[in-house]
Image (cartoon, rainbow over all chains, first blue to last red; front, side, top):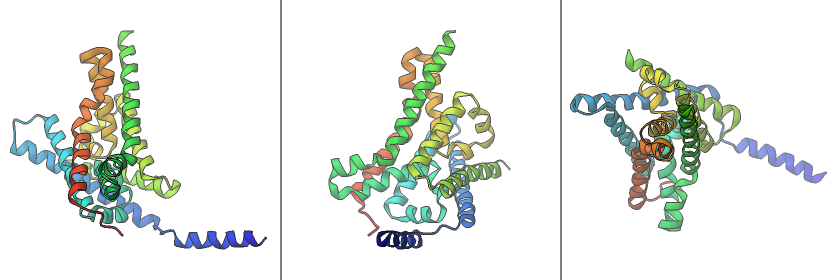
Length: 151
Length: 117
């Protein structure tokens, strides 16, 4: 009986302590920050094609992603991306910059546990599942495509 | 005009992620996995390219584009190398992104220390 009361008190305490994200502003913020990151990508891509007219569309796109990844990684390292993340939520997670952030952030965070067991292992805590599911599902799609091609 | 669509579609995809976060309290790792899978599926059914032509960076910058290029790589790998292409194609197409993300993360982890705490 006493335990139950304690549990309830604890639950109320936890509820009160969980940072509240107000749904409407966070939706709006995730929208415009996410949109802006995509716009930045388009801008870099178009600029590259403008400055180097001989560049193939594919290479320009690869450079664009590398530039975005670099930028996000750097902003994570200096502690700015986390602030954007708190503000924009999904707007900072869903773009490729969020993928970059998810690797750099633990890499720096767990640096003190050593280069191998800290940095190298922990950098894949979020990116690992993403890469694994991505590879497995794409191989699956490739096999289906191969079989369909045979028929 | 083109840029407006990039902004609107990119923003909408990110907002979709935020809606999932609010309604299901899903973690960011799961969000990323989910959106990569969506990309793979869109590409598998050849729906991604028509959207991509229209939305450009709006759908390619979100991680959905990463999933799509994995699947696209596997499919074009099959065309050029047959069955072996299913294994080589996906990573070939996304190698620049993965190598850059890992490389920069490693480099910056050597230079910078944790800011929080």
